[in-house]
Image (cartoon, rainbow, N blue to C red; front, side, top):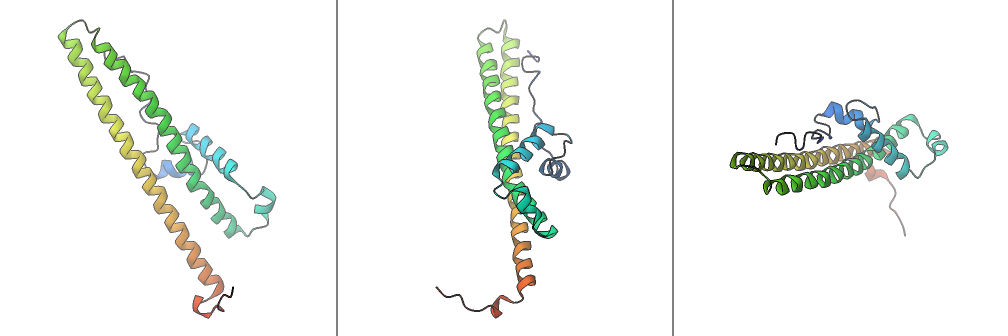
Length: 166
């Protein structure tokens, strides 16, 4: 009974900031498929061409890269979680279906315990996806704050700006 779902990948999302940073930067690290997906999404979501980006200052290029990474990371983790959750649902259904063919009470109890463990792991994955979202959201807010401060530094006090007319 313990080998029914032995091929299931349960650790498909980064578990710490270092791993998450590697994924965001497109380096293979421990999660090469996710890093590749982030890089692909950054490129797919981009509006500015590489030539247009090259005309920006290095600071602006860095800000643009950070602005592109956060939504791509959210897209990639959400898509990966959806795919894995769907696969895990199928696996749970397989375990539930096997209960009827259990040869004895011990086998049935083993299956029920395995189902409960799988449900706990699915809940843990859901929590991990939520926390990953919060981490990316916090990073995006910090980036936006840096942009506001950079604008003030570039322009001086906002109170000195001329009033905007229609």
